[in-house]
Length: 159
Image 1 (cartoon, rainbow, N blue to C red):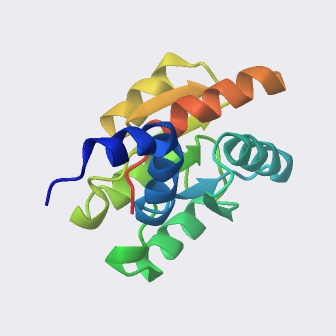
Image 2: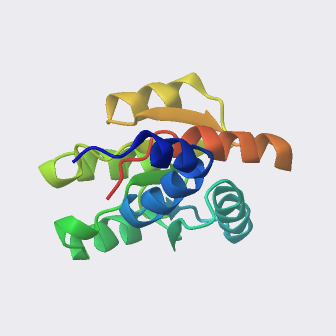
Image 3: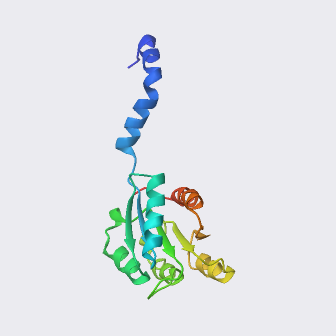
C-alpha cells in the first residue's frame, strides 16, 4: 500500500517520536549481574549504570560463589546481558568465577568484565585468559565512573 506524499510529509516531523515509541516497546531488556564484596562499590557502580541506562535491571551479589549460584539458578531466557565482577572477592576471585562459568556454554556469549582496584598486569592477564571480555581499573571519581559505566554498557547483549 502506498502512502500519499502529503501524508508522508506531514509525518516527517514526528518520525523521531514514533521511533522512540517503537524502540520503547521493541528494545530488549538489559540486565546486569554485578559482583563486588565492597557494598559501597556495589552501590556506586549500580548508580553509575542506572544514570546511563535508567531502565536497566541490576542484580547484585557480594562474592564469587553467589555469582555461580545465581547464574545456575536462571533459565536461559533470564540470563544477564552483562556480567561485571570485582577481581578480589571472597570465596572465589573474579578470575576463578570466569574459569568456572566459561565451562558452561550457556554463558559463553555473555560479555564478562573484570572491575578491580588493582592495575596488576598479572591479574589482567589471568582474567583475559579465563574469559574476561575486558579488564578495567576502578576509577577514583564519579565522572570517570559514569564514563566507564557507559563504556561497559556498550558491551551488553540484549536479553
